[in-house]
Length: 62
Image (cartoon, rainbow, N blue to C red; front, side, top):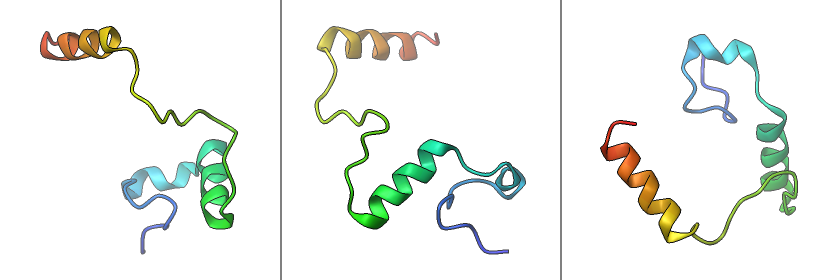
């Protein structure tokens, strides 16, 4: 069975669960050229202190 183009990276055993409303709305926005206002898509990096803390946590195994 070919992969659903909306979920190309989802393993076969998970495809039966369907998609989320966020995936549906994002797909519709892309297909129609609309701006998706349903969820945030930041266009800037977060605060440097937050990014540094995230890197430190990842490296520390937390």
